[in-house]
Length: 457
Image (cartoon, rainbow, N blue to C red; front, side, top):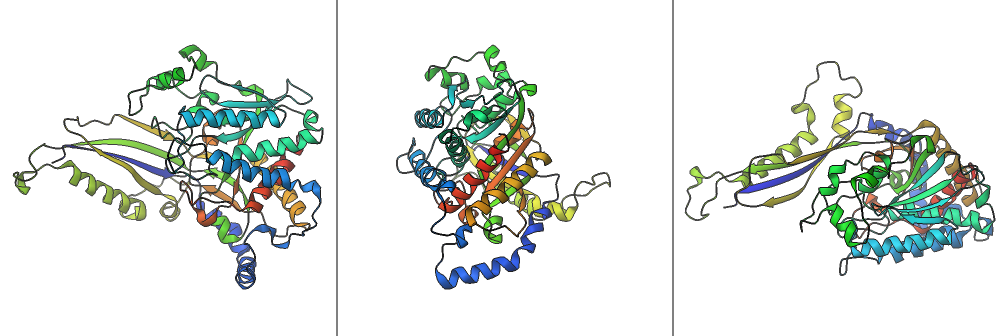
């Protein structure tokens, strides 16, 4: 019999009523139904480019904002530690190669580049006023195991494409403030079971003790960096933190990782907020014995106990009203909204003899509200980008959605105001090889990003 079972569970929680996700969904439902009928009857690709004109002008830069971005997404998706599947974890050989490739693309866009002491890749242009507060943009270069090609990568490559367009047009130096793109070394937390390593260091919330966290090979974060010729000490970890007075805001473009945008038939959405997360690592202790000779009535099998705990957790998140009660002081959300927003996952189970009954660690990430000013600017930029792409005014409201997944913007919210733009992904599928974004949706996001950056001219 197994003696110890470790259960890792992730609970997402939000202090914001997620019913707002569907505010614009119902408004657009009739349009979407008509659009869907047209798609099904005419074999038109279900992208927002439905009304596109084959003779659209070169000022839309499809060769950069669409074709080159898509090609680079596939190129970066081929940089993997896995044989036949995509895997890039913190400071792995593939992650280092990916960082070098991204750095080349940053330089191609006209940016000054460097790699910091936690492996984050930076590209920066100073604009007309190098002392002004900087706009930070970016996402993560690491992946989960057996990943898709768009998670994280799209938010880096699309921004670089927009800056490349400005550079080609001789306008990169006309920015009113510095713009810095960061490809964060770790967001997924796969290797060291600690998320947001890269962005947390920049935000100044990564504790010095994190350098001693070990992976499954007993290598520490500090060891992994040293193997790649990066010497990090407690002192220079603290120096990675940006001065809040030097940063104007952070904007992240990311695939939605959910089905709402596909359902409403819209390529882009502004993010209202990011749901919080609680991660717990739980150890259950049992009694070791021979599986064939110990009577059932005398067994203390932690695997069976873990199975019961998993089922109970599933029931709690599906039907919280059966388990939870409120004392009247919690007014930020109702039981009804909680029942539609609370999700949980048991992501890993491992068994091992002779472990103790302890909780070795946990990680909390509070819910984040995106900045209203940045969100408004992103919404306006989305209107402008889509109008350029379709050649017509956009009559529908830009969707405003909640994010159920965690993002680097959560860590950066401890440093500065944050905003996010979501891009539609097929079937809402993510963290999978089936993850996919239409080429024209990639283009739409690039045009929106370009329009947003142009507001900093």
